[in-house]
Length: 207
Image (cartoon, rainbow, N blue to C red; front, side, top):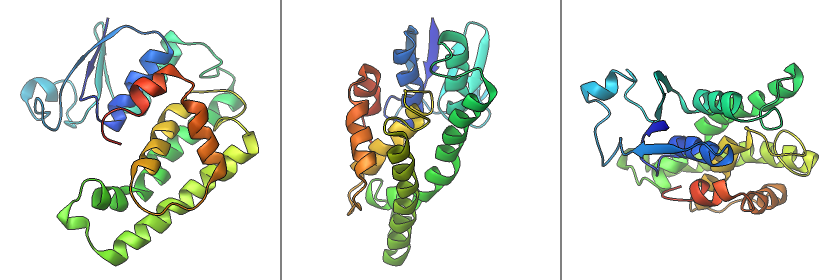
């Protein structure tokens, strides 16, 4: 059985939990991270020297980095419809996974820390306005892509890219500021609620 180390409220842990639901992978999860067992404990650092969740153990195989983990799970336990084997189709999926981890993830950082985490170090009004504008700009890029596909981020069917992107969309709607109208993103969010894995793990806990 797959072992998952990380608190269920973490957006990166929820990627793994959602993937397990999609691919019918049995797992056991242990609470590690903020409010639980410390990730700087020696036994955790032996598994991930970065002291970050999630970490998985699949038999004698240990792996960290959430997007790498879901790629591994899809490759081992799913089929080519979710994570294609054909080079161009897989590259399209990977493009959006990497975009979420780099451009989109960076864009929400200040706004999320200010408005959700209420970090004292992130309460500058000008920086917050700039952060919200930058986040909105990247969400506009996603809206254009979803309008073009009419369904999911990498095309007309659900793929692995929709797990990190779907969780990002949930974070967008759960962060309290005035959102510009993004009709394709809104329809996409509704579409994801048809998936049991998203309902169970994509919208649970903190955004």
